[in-house]
Image 1: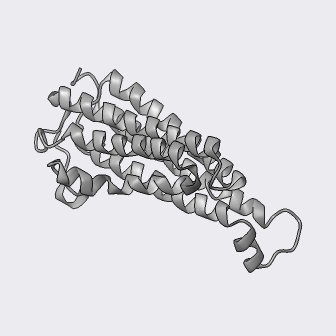
Image 2 (image 1 turned 90 degrees about the vertical axis):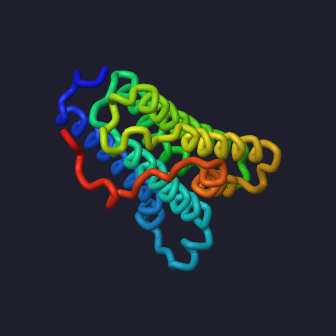
Image 3 (image 1 turned 120 degrees about the horizontal axis):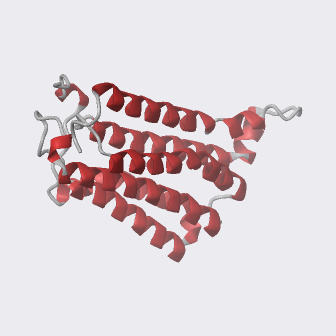
Length: 213
């Protein structure tokens, strides 16, 4: 229920989440560091050529985590309070985010056309997307958790669009695994597809001036 937590409690939840996401996105670079700290001499060209899938996996995962963080950030900008359901769903979301570096390294080592690695990777992202959709639904269901100046602006269909695209990517990967992790580029169609189905765009950061008490 709203009103049972302090502003500091919400700030701690957001700050903890941001710190965990920052650690996850930083861990992505560790496999790249290992490429040049194995005690052997390397040329830039040989590293880029031999480990190209490691670099592709890093770039894709960096963009994916950034995409999820932006969605989480914009969603939580609407909150003035949170419920226990939102709290624990957020922890499940965090669990999926911090698991991404492991699945990224798996993809980089196995190559892009390994069905098991791709399926696991996309499955983790489905969990992350589903958690955001649940948090959005909980926020819409309990409008008293929302800030009064932005109340009513959330549309749960936006989260469902992103989830649907990831499920589509998962199915397409099963049908055509040779495309590999590039099916995940469908995730970045979430914005255009959401606009096509009439989902209202969340306000940008500069449109949210202050958080009323």
